Each structure stands twice: as C-alpha cells, then as structure tokens.
Amino acid sequence: MYLVAGLGNPGREYNMTRHNIGFHTIDYIADKLGIKVNKLKYKALWGEANINGEKVLLIKPQTYMNNSGESLMEFVSFYKVPIENLIVINDDISIEAGRLRIRPKGSAGGHNGLKSIIYLLKSDEFVRIKMGVGAPQSKEYDLADYVLGHFTKEEIPIMEDAIVRAAGAVEEIIKNGAASAMNKYNQR
Image (cartoon, rainbow, N blue to C red; front, side, top):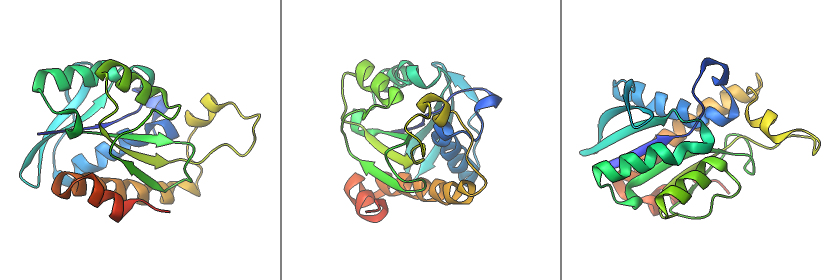
C-alpha cells in the first residue's frame, strides 16, 4: 500500500497558487484514474485508487501547509504504511519552474510542510517529488507572498506539463521504485 500526499492549503483563495501545486497534482492523478478525492478523514480529503496492482490513497491534507504532518502521521499510523511507501508532492522555490526533483529521503530544505511531516513522523525516509515553482525575481520580495501568489499566464502551461510528469513519476515510483523515477524524471 502507498500513500501519495500532495501538499497545499485548503480554500478557494489558494487555488492555482505556487504552494498548491501538490494539490493540483493529486487532482490530476485522481481525474486520470477516474476517482474522487472527496472523503474526509484525519484532517484530509482522500480517495482510494489502484496503481499497478497496488492500493494507493491519494491525500490532500486540509491542515494548511505548515501542519501537513498532523494528517499524514494519522494515515501512516492507522494503515501501518512503511515510511518509504509515503510519497509527498510539494512545491520548491529553489528549482526552476516546471522542473522536477525526486528524492528518496532528505531534509526539509526550508519547506515548512516537509518540516512538519519529518518532525511528526520522526523520519525523513519518505519519497518526495519536488516541483519547481521558481524563486522571486527580487530578494526584497516576501517569500510568503510569492508562494501564496498565483502562477503567471506564462507559467501555467509549464506547470500543467510538470503536473503530468509528476503524475508519471508517482506511477513510476510505485511500479519500479524511486531510483527508476529519479533516472526518468529528474532534470539536470
């Protein structure tokens, strides 16, 4: 069994913001598989899918980004899922918009959602799919405003393509492991 969690913030005002790219990827995967992510459990919206013969829960924590670990800790604990079978999809400002970077484990890299997950699971041994959203052009730009800002008209098609590739990476991780997905989807 796998848990695939896309990170984001609940609420219409956060729709199509950089911070919510994880939510959008979960929505894309659900649409592709013909399932709904509309059940409520452990402070998350979730739906059940089957990918490559594996039971997969698609999860969108509704705790706001900084508390994402609260929800995922409950899912991991209840379903007794090995930490390495947790796949987290999150935004990353240190990566160019549209690029993916898959890692089998690692630090939070300054991402508050990942910090919460690592802290509450007491482990950083979960797979993450980091989706580049680029960095603000100016050092004076407030980082919170940037990640909570909407994609530009030029960025939207780039990010739509990234969502499709991230969904492919999820499937590849479940089918052949993180190393295979890294070889196939990490962009230099």
